[in-house]
Length: 174
Image (cartoon, rainbow, N blue to C red):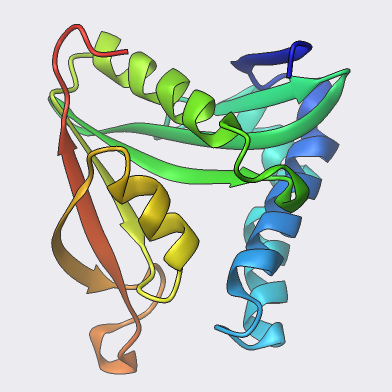
């Protein structure tokens, strides 16, 4: 990891971000969601055209943060402020072969620092109950369960929900 760089996503990272997020989504949700649902989410959120737009003009969030090693994107994430003093992690994925190396922690730290600089005193994330890898990751970084809400783009009647996790941030936390 000595050649690892954490930085804002740039136009040359678009394909790598799409690749890492699609692979991460597939690995995380294989056996939890139908393959049709997995591919539909990837087709909506993790395609180069959308990611290029989000890099060019991030609207409603702080933009992509990437982990790059030897010019290859191996992790990507992002978040933004959802209310004054409240940040949220919207997305965080790694190349599945690189999990457990501390790269996700570095990405989370970079996103957190950007939010802290904007005045965030707490940080939220939504994690699906079956996403045990995600839950372990966030719990081990100080997040606590604070409730649930319908899964993104579903109605309460459909029954799918995400757990809402929160942690307090100190003004000087990095």
